[in-house]
Length: 252
Image (cartoon, rainbow, N blue to C red; front, side, top):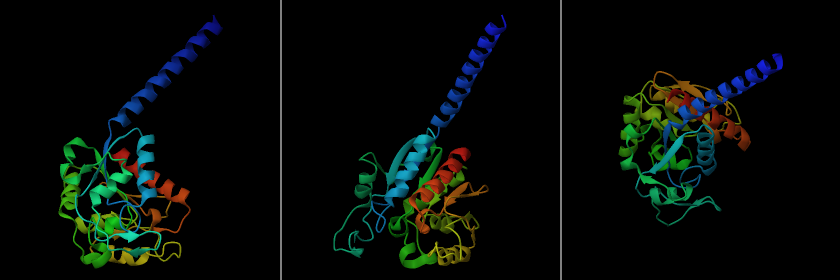
């Protein structure tokens, strides 16, 4: 009799555990996340490892993903083998389709009502094609569709994730917000200090945060991580992006 009760108890616990796991998975599956790309390649588009890391962590978190990009011409095209601009002309949406395996939509079609959160990878494309930060710094302008999407998610109280240089989009659009682009005054983060200063000059607050971590601005529902703003091993960048994605899904 005791053995039978123990067996039934084990079976009950097993079923309960499975039910809880299924409920958790079901809840996560309901998270619909938009990912906005800025081209393909670190020097003139979205940083490929960052975009891929975001997609892996979203997949692991059980979220469904739709990818978008603005249908505009890139600021310029860079030969990634030489690190030099070329005379080519390329379209941000067309190039982003490479990262999305063709499954991408025009940013103008993104509906905030159909998504629970939005995430922006970094790469120079975020600072060249989504805004003009690469040229004008804190005096930059943000692409009108990008700005409209950011404001729509913010007004609906839906979380926004940004990594690498893309947190400057939030700093430009949401005065007073908190973001991170890494650790200040640290040789492993060569571009962080100047970028942080510009963010602070915009009336926002830069939070000095290590590459494997993320910062959550609960008031504005912004989750940011520095990614390749740090000269770090790729697994540390991956872990930091994972922290950001988890933060976004938790808020969604």
